[in-house]
Amino acid sequence: MTITVKFWGVRGSIACPSPEHVVYGGNTSCVEMRVGDNVLIFDAGTGIRNLGRDLVRRGVTSASIFLTHTHWDHINGFPFFVPAYDPANSFEVFAGHLTGQGGVEKVFSAQMANPTFPVPLSAMRSRLSFCDFDTGITLHPAQDITIRTAPLRHPNGAVAYRVEYAGASVCYVTDTEHKPGQSDQSILDLIEGADLVIYDATYTDEEFEKRIGWGHSTWREGVRLCQMANVGQLALFHHDPDHDDKIMADIEKQARAEWSSVFAARDEMVVTITGKKTN
Image (cartoon, rainbow, N blue to C red; front, side):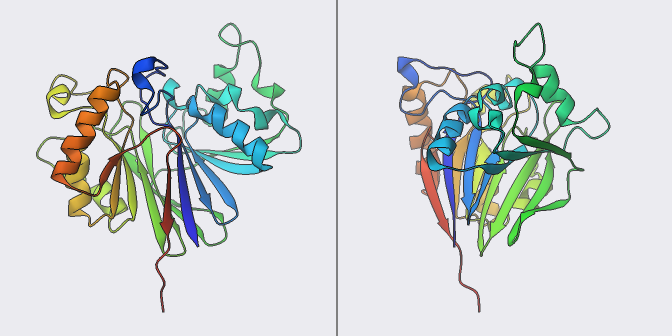
């Protein structure tokens, strides 16, 4: 009775494959959660390409994909998601920030249209379904799995998710900007008592001051929120592409000195959360 989390892409903004980004990885946002017999995918950045190949290897034929939002770094891996081209497979794509704006299918179709991409969305012959929801509702993608949602402060909007299963809970909270000196009550309510929180830690405090309005947060704010909400572990996520391995190691060291329950997410890192027994 576990939630197994695997990080397939941990960068923000743009992929950065280079010798200086080997330890922490260079793929953009994509996180897999194996929940019972179900596969839940969060965001479809460049990391989803390697995830897709792994799903084929494992014989997985269906999954639910939950998007925080549809900025390029969170969707531009989807055209290279090989399982979506197989007619034997089925995938649901969920988005909570596009109601009244044409919906997520329209965005995915536009991404894979001439003259910017040569293969149309219709070439994906799997059973693809698109679900637009109002942020704040609770989703039930499968029996015994509950996913709560909450709005985030980000240009064009974004959604945070809390996955609950068999007493285990994991929150995916990325692409959000905090207001200095103020606690985001929506986030605090969502992450309260969670076993693991994956949080937008794009900037250091010094960098954040110069990037107000860009829609991202800091590792120190993540620590503060998680300590206030009695969270078990914090995964720093959505690393700035300018933060090479040396910078990331220093950030992780600083964060762990402040709170020992913090780690910086890396491409292909696996974390297993075991459910709490209840009477």
